[in-house]
Image (cartoon, rainbow, N blue to C red; front, side):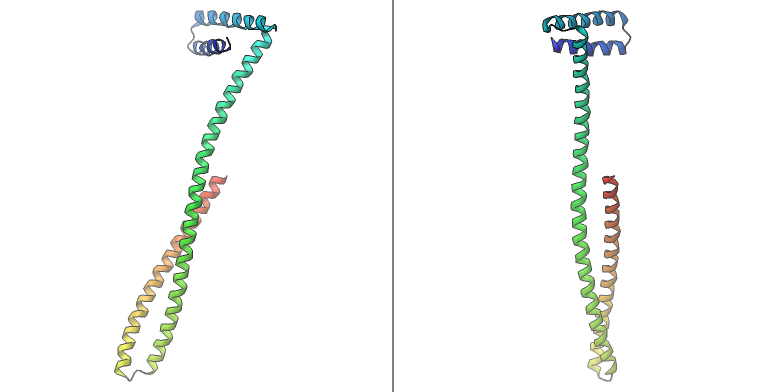
Length: 171
């Protein structure tokens, strides 16, 4: 009987929406009759039965709203986890690039010192050949250093963008 009443009420709402007045009045009478029968079976008055059905309808609406919120929170949580893993990956890559940058800087310093020492001993042809090789190597290391600095800069910008996105999601 409760299910029939609920369906009558739902049908009533649909018919009101489409302004079918004679059918609406018949359904309204049928609904009132169902409320009276339920009240007689439960030995309570019609208004308490109507109130109970209205509370059930409101609770069902609240359940639907909560289910919608839960599903949207699930997608936000998935996005947060994805962003966290991306952040961890970028942090690891930043550490690797920083380590490479330090190694290249140390190698550059060592080669520059060797170059200065060789410049002082320029009279030897073997030294001049070695000096040319070292200058090429220094040039390569400078290029690698520049590339690493660019990678570091890009990772820092990416990391900053990721942090802003995470802040936006948290809000």
